[in-house]
Length: 636
Image 1 (tube, rainbow, N blue to C red):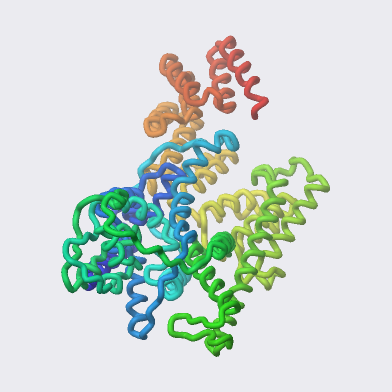
Image 2 (tube, rainbow, N blue to C red; image 1 turned 135 degrees about the vertical axis):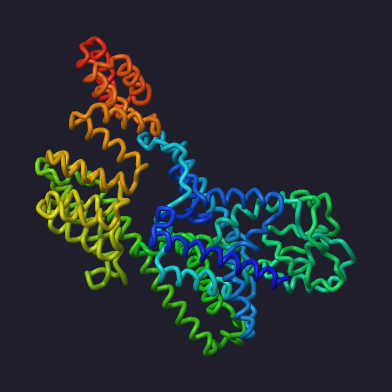
């Protein structure tokens, strides 16, 4: 059975590789318009929780969850590439006579479920329950479908981080925490699969006479006490069971098999004998201390240097928590082993123990450094928020001058960020965090040092490569500091990244503001050629047509846009005003009605609607909207 499962897992890995290769070839040769299916990865479901985006990852995850309710936690054992990695590491260790012992903790078992709730449930809870009171401007964008992408790797880390991730979540977690250690203490998807497994009717069941030999337990790589489970309940009820069926294949009496029947939630009705109490490795005090330690380490390492992703951080946190606990036991206990290594014997620390203590000391120092860096960044963010302002306001020479208190906050934030920077820049870090650089750039801009701000933005660009969000800020700052360089920068960026829609819109707006209609039309035409279905481009093209006096083409495009985005109230006001100029009063009235329907409490929409009614000679209606606008002012 192990070989069959290994074959399936290898095929899964080959399918993943084929998906990546197809994406690379589609970009290189223009197949399928340079697109491929979005990553079939459960973490992509976060896009729905945050932005309402349905992608291939969400569909796949929902199917996996639904199947788990029937078949149990089969996906982990038969379809997960990280399980394949852990099983390979376990097999490799076995070749060197290393048999990792499973680490058993009560509280840390909750980490996967807590992480799953944080990833998939919390964003929705925050948006619909908390945000209406704290951030009323945070509106739900609606549900959209996004099943293809031109940038398959956008949500994944770079190659270096990926290799380190595989080493930590593969080798390190297995060596320290036992077989499938990452699944047990770090996988958020397992956080949902485990409770759903309890209601699944398919599971390992006792069908014959069990002689209690324990071979099933010995062969289980999911750390399930199979012989005790079937003896107590007549079936395996442990949600850690991943349906690998190694226990079935190794049973000498064929006493167990995979079959349908009562789920684990009803096990009390089928109890055969009193189960043995679970032997945990930690006291209750140790459980609490280690749980808090794991939480602190996760907070410290997650996003460090803008490089460590969430799942890698939980892997680091759980491994370090175990190692620090072992280090404490090295001090406390007279005898201590780590697998076949004897760390301490009869109160005397052995050579492997000294080596282990040195490694733990280094890791403690590294973790303290990470904690201090995160605290410094937190303090910098706290001070920056007191003086922060939009870039468009910061570059305005007529903006209010900072007060003395504001200047002190700016300097304090810069000092905190410098402390969190790399050592060569006077900080304590081993590398630069581009997010810190961006924050410092914003502060220098607020301080009035646009040149220094632009310099930092260019450093970020060189460090992480072109990024649309960074380039949008750079475009604004460059327009204030080096206006002569802007057009060349825009042309080069759009040549290299024709799919940068928002950046292109900014470039078009800049051309329109400078009355460069020909340039604006060229930028839009190039954008429509590369992204013909991009709604922002369609909307802006319609506006350009209207401004150029091509009202028929403008209204046609605007109608097309509104068919796809019917809730855009400002677009409805633009259409209403254009139709009024064309003396199409009935259609204009329908458009302004839609505008007020979707944006009746939006000041910008009300201002446009007031202009429409004045333009069409209905000052009474205009005054009514002015009164409504006045009532909204106190909330603005």
